[in-house]
Each structure stands twice: as structure tokens, then as C-alpha cells.
Amino acid sequence: MVKIVLADDHALVREYVKDWLKEEPGLKVVGEASDGVEAVELTTRLKPDILVTDLKMPHLNGIEVTKRIRQLSPDTHVIVLSLYGDKVYVDAALKAGARAYVLKKLSSDGLTDAINAVIAGEKYLSPPISGNTTDFFDS
Image 1 (cartoon, rainbow, N blue to C red):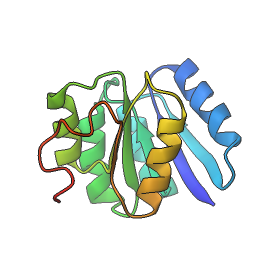
Image 2 (image 1 turned 30 degrees about the vertical axis):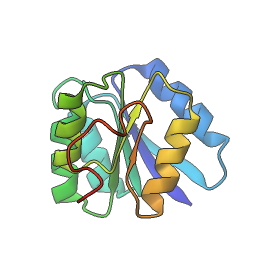
Image 3 (image 1 turned 120 degrees about the horizontal axis):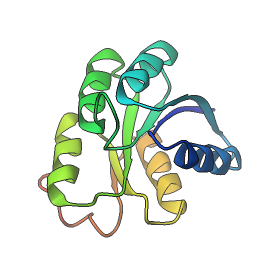
């Protein structure tokens, strides 16, 4: 069972992703956070396999959350789920230690693909941005 913590400041997004993940065999949402500080606290305490985090949240953004999780819970893989596909955001998330970057505007299959890739020890980028980042697949 792959344990997942969801972090997004929009309750509707969290609810949609949680409901959708319930339907996926082998995946379980074990916690939800509405801001970056709560995301770090929950992830550090629960030690999930994956943290799915929004990029822009109150108190700590997804980049800072990713940096802290890499230090405090190094076995937890971070997937950024964001509206923003700009190169500057993607590169910052990847440099902070995110293993995947998924655009919210894509179908939920993109998140499933990212989770499966990350659990398999691979990295993942949504197709529109996969050829548009620096050194992601070289590290």
C-alpha cells in the first residue's frame, strides 16, 4: 500500500484528488494539509511514501516544503501538483528535490503516472513540460 499525504490550500482540490485516489488500487491517502507548515508537520509525523503538494500555499510554498521534506523525511518522495508550468517554477521544484511535477490542468491519469514512476524509482514530468527543464533526467 502506497501511503500519500495531500497538501493544497484549496479544500475542493484536496477532496477531488482524495476521492480519485481512493479508486486506485494500492494507494491510500493518510493525511491532508491546507498549508505548507501543516504539510511538513504531517509528512514528518506520518512518513508517507509520497507527498503530493501544491506549489503556492500559505505559510510555506511547495518549494520550501519540498526542501524541508527532503531533510526531515528523506524516504518520502515529493510530487508537485500545480497550475504553473513555467520553467522557473518547474526547475525550482526539481532543484529542491521533487521527484515529479504534474500540471493540474491535465487529467488525473497524469498524477497516477507520476505516482507509479516515483514508486518505481523514476522521475516524472507532465508531457507539456518534460522537454523544457534543465538537467532533470541527468541527475
